Every structure is written in structure tokens, then in C-alpha cells.
Length: 212
Image (cartoon, rainbow, N blue to C red; front, side, top):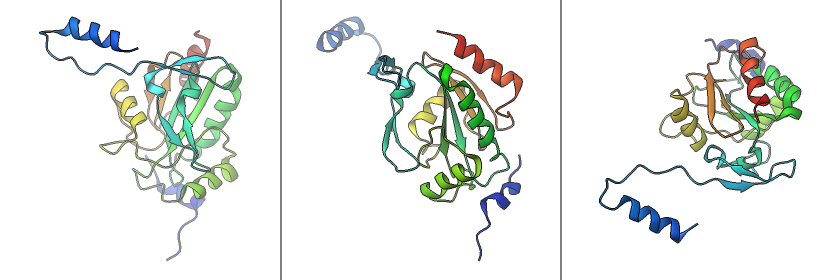
């Protein structure tokens, strides 16, 4: 059976420390055990060379899509981060072009788009190399992308588990979008129906870029 091309398949988708530990023990003696506290921020050195505290949201390492080399998300500390789950065989796949345009336009102001290919909706069957080649040759994607992983349910990667918890929503389809502010807090989530160039969507991004 012949495998359909990626482009033809697009139409098939619709819709520090001991002291701290002692103080904690003294303060909670006789009290009910609290829920786990967020991990303490670590120091990160982003591309501009300025050290920035890494928020818990970004304290993850994922293999890069192109070569599976480990990438520490702390390198994006202090930036406005747009996280998107992607797929190559979806009707929303052309959003790659808009996401690349968004990343290119606002990169100098501190925006970075992060793409996470996923086969959770059975529309990303290719290998990491095939996905990387398709994204670059078809849509000229240059924003950071990571190896294929799950983005929902029990097997969701740790970043998407955090995003779901913080936003109250998991991806219902490909090209869900989560915006993380410079402080590492999840600002808002949007469904697949929100286009990258939609005015209201871009306005929220611009407001976050203006915040320091």
C-alpha cells in the first residue's frame, strides 16, 4: 500500500540546603504533610549570555528533533515562550508557516516558539528525521523543535503535564498553543482554531513581550 504524501494528507484532518531542610522540619512539625513544593529555580545562561533564574516550568531537557541532541529548556529563561504540539498530516499543519513568521518577527524582542511533534492524534507517523525534513522543506521552519513525544494523558511529556495543570486544559487536537511569560508562569492556552496571526492572539503575545 502506498503511503500518502504529507501534503495530500493535510486535507484529512478537520476540526541550600541542610538549613532549609531543618527550618522546614521545625515549621511543619505536628502539621499535615504539605503537597510537594515547586522545584527551586536554577541558574540558566540564555543565548544573550545574561544569567537568568530558570523557572520550574522550563526545568526540562528534551532531544532536539533534527539530531536528538539533548536541549535544556532553561536556555529560554526570561523569554516569552509559545509551546505548540504539532503534526504533519493535519489540516492545521499550514499553521507552521504562521508560527515561523511569528517567531521570526518577534524573536529580537524575546519570543521563542517551541514545537513538539506528537502522534497522539494519529497524524504524525514519521520518524524525527522525516518530520524535520518536512517542516524545513515545506514551511521553512527554523524555530526550535523537539523529538516526537506524547502531549496528553498518562504518557504526556513532563512539560505538557505542567502546562495542562497550570492552564486547566490538555491538547484536544494538534496545534494547541500555550504561552509562558518571562516569569515562567503560564499565561493562556488556545485551541487549534486560533491562527498564529489572529489579532487577539498576537495582542496577548505583544503584551507579554512588553512586560519586564
